[in-house]
Image (cartoon, rainbow, N blue to C red; front, side, top):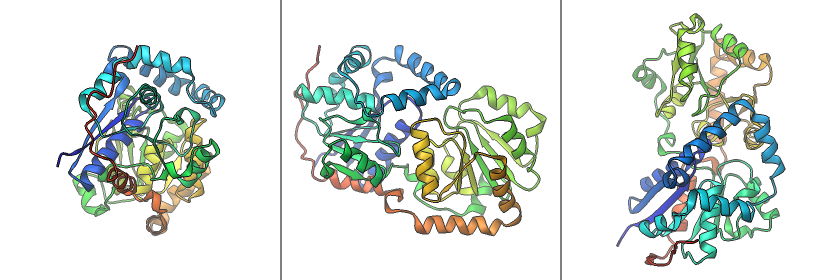
Length: 387
């Protein structure tokens, strides 16, 4: 029996969409080695010249003018991508998408970003005969995710399911799977042994994450954190922001044996395991990974739009607080310094009370069940290039 072929399409607008695709791919393969997965950032794959330029412009806008991003998000909140936008996406980025699908012959296509989701929907209207699953990678449901050609929606929470129902999507096609996290986040490990492996001290530890792009924290917050380095270990993970990393490492404020300034890492699961508190931007993937590790979180300056919704969900579920004042930082650092057992017990309670759709393997389990109903047809010659 041949393997079931799953093709996952994403885009690099923010690191979370592609991380979710890879997380689901690895989770499916762990649960069933007979699943064959391929992850592609479709725009960059088909147009490696223009794609990175647009991504760079988006990244700069998010960093410099986040309120503009929020304004655009809200102004288009209830709208799907219009016909003109879909056509422009096809002409600029995705003209060869049909050939990619023809070559790989997937049994199922899963999209973790609205753009390839719209493109595959367009192909389905023109005759593509492959089931399309849409994995919404935030704790909200923007209108750009919605297309009538989608066969199944995979969503983070019952609240997001209700938002889709309000947009006249039948409940039977909406599955509350949670957002997938990589199998590396599924298991709990021995904190003390792992700290030794990572060359960290065995003491209360705070992980500060700037996201994959290394977004900047305020100088006041950084100074406040650094001032507590005698009794709190600080691990700064600043992503791909090499300029910021060099600046921090050269700054005497951060030259302390209990302060560690790191760049982009592939072992975030280990850093979360050894940490007692996470300070982060509330991206959908980071929050979900933090929940998988049951680590308390402080959310820093959410970008208006989906980050606000992510933040609201995890605050309401008791996973942390909004870092909106110096007093919030002081409270948590004092707890770590003077009442460490309180934070440890809080983390244990988070793990015990976690909602079923936040179980880290839940998405892979549910999707695997859905794939068991996919007929292993031969899809060759059913996709045709479109003009």
